[in-house]
Amino acid sequence: MSASAIAATIAERDWCVQPAYLPAGRLERLRHTLVQGWEQGRFHQAGVGRGAAHTVRHDIRGDHVLWLEECEAPAVRQFVVEDIERLRLALNAAGYFGLHDFEGHFAVYPPGTGYARHFDRFRDNDARVVSLVLYLNDNWHADDGGELRLYPRATAPEPVSVLPVGGTLAVFLSADVPHEVLPARRERFSLTGWFRRRI
Ligand code: OGA
Ligand code: MN
Image (cartoon, rainbow, N blue to C red):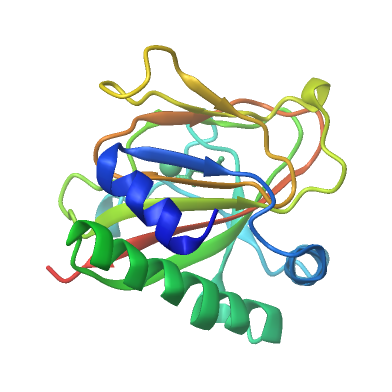
């Protein structure tokens, strides 16, 4: 599915899942960048809330993150400058979303950790419009767990379960689709980000 097909889907309903979004070589370079940063201890425990309300809550989310803007790796630059930008323009063309920029991070969930059901919008800031998750796992199997579960109210009668298989891209509307990350039996790798409008 091309960027414009994903954008057309998101303009019509509030979620879209696309397997094998990136060619294997590019995916592997992103994965390698994540693993290197993880091994170098550059990640920090993710928190919930913004500004003064920001706290680490292991009971809510267990991931560790490394913001993409702290990454100089060419694989990250290429992903942001080419793929993300293509998707941003396609979304704006298809749905008049007015997406202005993008923020994103690599995420590692240690075994047994997840992220309780939530929306991707802060209470005091509604800049995030479209959420995106690209999975960077090698050889992920159903019994490894770690599904992303989407609860699109109007457009899917049942929750949508997404296995974090490397190369799968999930896109959904940040304010409309509650979602959760189920615990996995292995370390779970992803790149997560948000297209924002100007506020
Ligand atoms: C998030 C999130 C989903 C996933 O980081 O806000 O919901 O599948 N991630 O990693
Ligand atoms: Mn989320």
